[in-house]
Length: 145
Image (cartoon, rainbow, N blue to C red; front, top):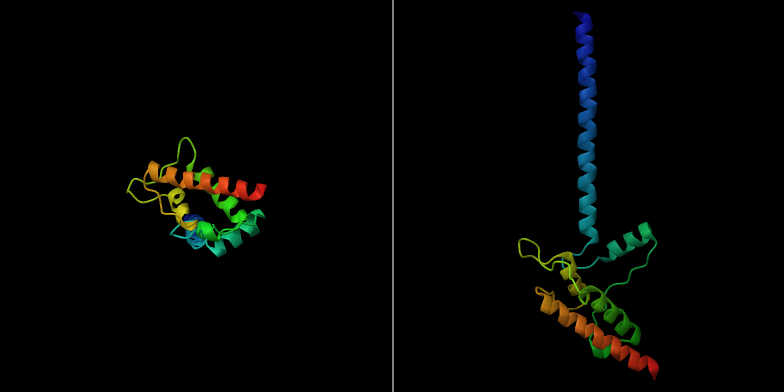
């Protein structure tokens, strides 16, 4: 009978360590998701901390979106914003702009980070792309002077 009790204790010990591992894994995943929310701005784009973390992890140096008025932009700003607008919203087939609950997706929210209204329809996204084309054309005219 004593041998049985010892066997049970060791089984419980293994079970407890498995449970401990599972709970620590849950804690670490929760921690990771909270870091993600700190990196992503709920209104769209990345926060300064998110850009810094991306630079640390990937080695890339991301800049915040250009939110200036067209009259205040430098030629480089025009090129950056125009390229972004055409790349994001000028595609033949756009990614979804709204999720199942009718909320804007991260793709749509990126427009806010660049100083544009958040598009809810394909037509609104195409207007942003057309504005980007105009900015690129203006940049080319200035560059050729």
